[in-house]
Image (cartoon, rainbow, N blue to C red):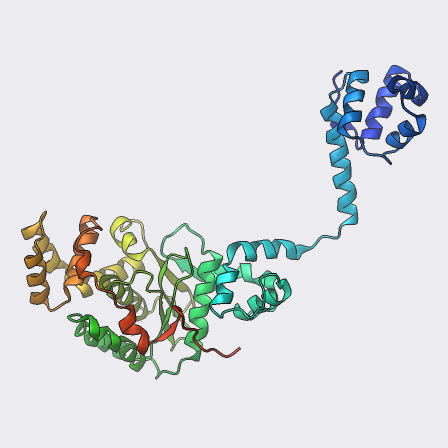
Length: 383
């Protein structure tokens, strides 16, 4: 028998319609099913639910698939529960926050104050304080203020959390008033540090002296952020770095890239936050699709590490084989660390397994002189 269950709201209504079609009474159905008539009354009035066993019995009697009765029962039960259950809009918020934020990691790093991951109220209070909002519902609305360089991809909550930690620490720093001329002179001072990895320890002081707040925050797991540039106000630029790749070439490229955003005053008027993710892979593989401001920053960073014309000349003379003596000789000629030359070769040839011996680690060098949060350090910020 063909039945459209959409014409009925409850399984009892369907049974009643089937009885009427056959001209049966409830007593006849009770006799056919060999059950008490009270059981039929309860099911027709939907006081007793239709289970799988009873649905199969009805299928045998009326020729209507048992699934139809069970589907109606499911819809009816859900409709009743919706009436009884008060909607809780915070469930959706909690799902987004707890599903999108590494709450346990944020607790372990001292970003959230809560005794247990099970203490939902304390965690929600901590999150509203961390993101500087009145209610947890407002957290999901914040990413509109940030722009990622890998266009087309939304800023994730964990990337947003990293950003807010950088911002909170930057607000705590005391630096002189920023001037454009001082920033330009800082580039010259920084270029004099390229020969030795140990000189990197001077970077925070140079940036601070020209009014740039420089913050290093360890990346949250899977956040894939390299750096960020934004302005607290029109005279207060901030550069944040994650050092997720502890290599001399990556450090200088990311730093100079973010510094160029500052020099070009990107985001100064709009207060737009520029987050750089997978930065060096973008500069190589997506040069034709990235924004002009990113292309300018990439070029400035690459030229800073190794002047483009000199790099191209070196590659033209030595490619496809770059001997150790050639890399060392070229680096010495242009007065930079060999790791910067090696990094440029790796990026241009896309052979990222080569010359790793030159890519020295720099994190331990810069951490003692910078505002740092991570790797066992919790930067003290006021609540």
